[in-house]
Length: 319
Image 1 (cartoon, rainbow, N blue to C red):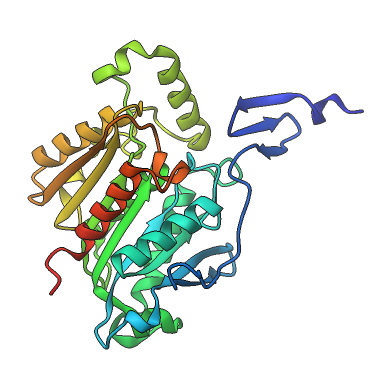
Image 2 (cartoon, helix red, strand yellow; image 1 turned 180 degrees about the vertical axis):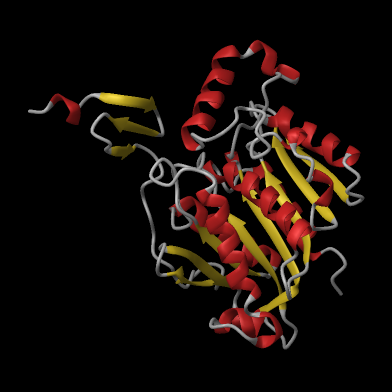
């Protein structure tokens, strides 16, 4: 047997392994579930292909139709996490979470299925996510191919949200909207849950966690081989001169007390405040919890509180 088929070139357990023959073995985040009509919430979902050429797609959600009026609903665009290399918009935990958020907030949602590293290294995920946003924008003024968006989604009340790497993507989509605009779309707010940001210089409790820091550095360089390093603006907002151009008026940052990345969430709050952006930023910290705990235990007290806080953030100012 060719030894290259079993020799590991890159081991990032418990997430994935890369073998010397180029084979990618994803250990986590491989399970998927189909779209559905959820019996508990009445939320309906379906999958759409955005780009046949690249395979970029999305899972769409609408809340229970009997709860709807003639007034269109806020539109949430969600970006899943997984270190840019595992999980999908179709993973059970993401399907369950977005379904719950759609029901709680009474919104239409687009959960983005972007291509992942290492087969598609960054910035592919950013480019794919922007392509989905352009597809969403094509539905402005009642146009576009998808009836759920034209019939139910209000493109004047759009929100971005994501967790971990997905929060990083949501941040960059907000910056790009601010810099370039997105015709027919008004982004009101962005929700960043346990955002995956980083930097060369340790902050807060990072200084005492050399092993954890090394793992984050290694993962970043793995998913973005062309990076300039851990101070690349893609991963370190402090290095990005465009930070003040965030294209929304409100940002909610959710952090978890036991999460190694929480210091970056709080730091991001400070950076936005000094950037000249001029919007309003809020932080919600969950005591005693770790990274993406709300996906692991969605019915725990803090997960329910965060779900309600996110829904209230989206619906603030609604009649």
